[in-house]
Image (cartoon, rainbow, N blue to C red; front, side, top):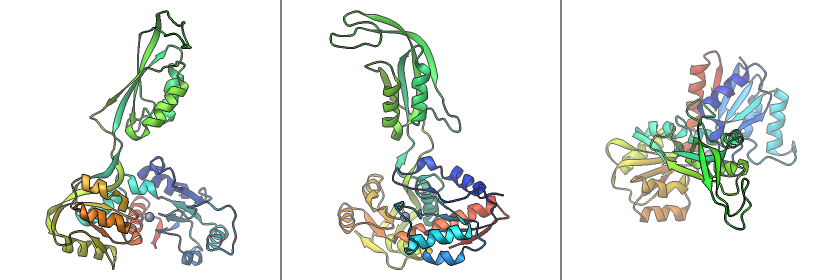
Length: 352
Ligand SMILES: [Zn+2]
């Protein structure tokens, strides 16, 4: 078994394509081609890890070690020391950060499971589908389709490049001052065109439309967008769900804080109400409090929230509890370690 087998498996569960644009998930230090027997799963690359790398083939992190890629490597700095330790022990390092945060079956389901939530859905859902139909002159269909596919359109489950193409006749009358690709101003044209239709996730639409316009030969591109009731696999940050029965806020916080090892929860808003609908987002999830309120949650459990956001949420009727960034994200370690042990029974997995 190779290190790449482990990272490929993690990529299948938490696809790198779901990463936030500012994230630096993925390979931190190679190589991944070497054999893999022992791995460490950790939330952060603490400096103490540098003395534990002998015989370790791969470190799986949640927070990337190279989050702000350095301009130079100075072994006298903590980052330099960590990189030196990895390179000298030949240990590879791989981060699964925001793909874990947003993917179905990642952080959201893990925390919702600890709380015992049911009917769980993303707080800020992505993956809604839109149908896009564009009218393209014959001979240019493949280039337009290819551009849209590269920008994220045309994916249905594990099938890519999905489209449907119907030939027909397009008509148009270019006004004075236009520079038509076919015909001339003031004369009606009839052109053999193809109605090219495909689907795209709603959040990818700006890129897909931009790519379509660039690849399309016409000055004015005719296209239609239709919202779809069928949807892709919904994912996104945070989760909201319902408890089996209304539970006093204090009791729920105590239970959750104990599971997470959170010692000093900070509470904003009403501490005494009974709650049924609960939202949760680990780490710096505080900015999602409006989504939690809109989703009908009475309580929002997160890692960190700014003081003023907390006050505003409390006054708006949402009780918010901050349980700590590390505390709400550390379940990553046990969760990912368990997934790897199940998939690769021969692998020796240490949790940090
Ligand atoms: Zn984090």
